[in-house]
Image 1 (cartoon, rainbow, N blue to C red):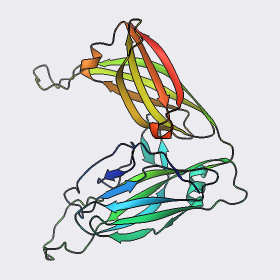
Image 2 (image 1 turned 30 degrees about the horizontal axis):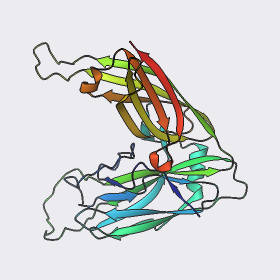
Image 3 (image 1 turned 90 degrees about the horizontal axis):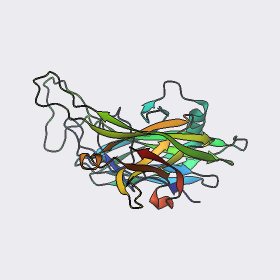
Image 4 (image 1 turned 90 degrees about the vertical axis):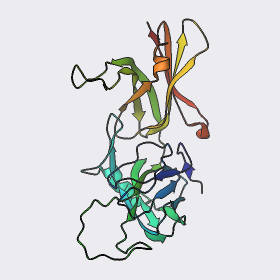
Length: 301
């Protein structure tokens, strides 16, 4: 058995409102928020892909907070839109429903002391007649608020009203079955300049303007794609380029066929983007070999 972890980084640390969704694979470090139970979550890996011969995988969950916490696991359906935003599915697709039925979690709930860890087994059970395809669900790990007083505190009979912050993390679990393939193309590369925004003519604290690079990733085939976007600028006819920007862990999930990516250009680099060409590449992450999936070049006046 071999489970392919294709996260941009080996672990995810996060503590935020339970309604938040994981969008990037970059490490997010956060202390327990005010009003929370004091529990925080580290999850590794941040992405699971189970290929044809894979039957199980392991996810590590760590309580990086300063208080004991109870953690509950569940599978949720999440949609991606053209801008890459992830939102809970109002009506889960047949593929998402099938993915949830294929995956078993053990254990589904556990208690961790501060700095304690728990290994969770993700077991795959495929029916004999499962059609070829890619099936995606998402593993949600949330800290359940503790109703007991924390150490050093006594229970109070006073009425208090407040917002309970519930740490949570969500990672994709992708099941691939049968012969699957995908092709990628990059198009629509363009520069977007935004002017400074002021609330009124006398506002001295205006939001500064800037330069951004927009592009579209087009996906065809019967599986999702995942990789890193890198933009380089080559002045004049020079063969030596400078890196303008990079976005790691960019996924294009089924069923969408095109995703827009936006990179903000640092001001120090933006002044140099004239009289040359931009080269945009979309490649597998370095830990997966860095294979080039697609590239394009556009002239910059």
